[in-house]
Image 1 (cartoon, one colour):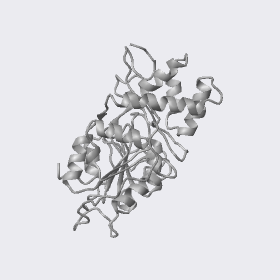
Image 2 (tube, one colour):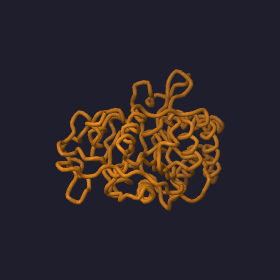
Image 3 (cartoon, one colour):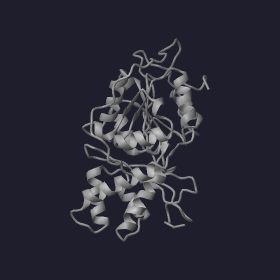
Image 4 (cartoon, rainbow, N blue to C red):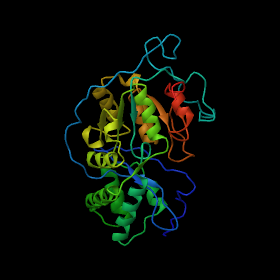
Length: 318
């Protein structure tokens, strides 16, 4: 197997995305390689069809504020802001008191690296792209590409592969490769299916808001058997601005028929957390790198972490 030092996945550590700026946004993802060592990292959406957002579907509304619940007088979740500088962030081992809400009006999931493990497909595609152009994909390339939008990634790839003016063609080539890899299938992240079951059983409407393009989002959700679990899915090529802009989350909540301020977002990256916070949402973070600090209201080790269930008001329903 091929070794790329410094990006192993065998240690269980994970990589997340950073900010993106393009109106038709993208996230890179990386994963295991066939070989002795592995590369974790980046995500970039494949080419997908342009078109209107998915049709709105009627969804059940969850139970709201009960006597003695932790919802505020307005019905909004009462969750403290992240710790000030110098104060340790909350994690599954250190969650501040008062963070437990009643059931949210909706739960909106990021996809790449949070709901599904698309990392492996992205890494294989990126390695293939670089090999096809006589180069080697490295951890430094991963770090540089993480969170890049389609247009930004195009510029970076043109530099990395020393092909001035060919960035768009390179991104298109990468998109085609990752679609091939995605057809091999991806699996849900640990705890994802159980959490969906718990939220669905509690009557909480579910949505996906992903920077990936529609073609890739549909491919991997369908392949993982999760396409029918969500009332709404919104892709990066269906909004004016991708994450870190709030558009994806605002559109998902609009289609669900709930105020974004009453919903909870689940994210794995600084880019996604910024988008959800900009939408006014409570944010639960599951960083794809253990050492990465997310500006989320609660940070946990995985979707299986009890802290996630507690923060969603599911702790007495498990």
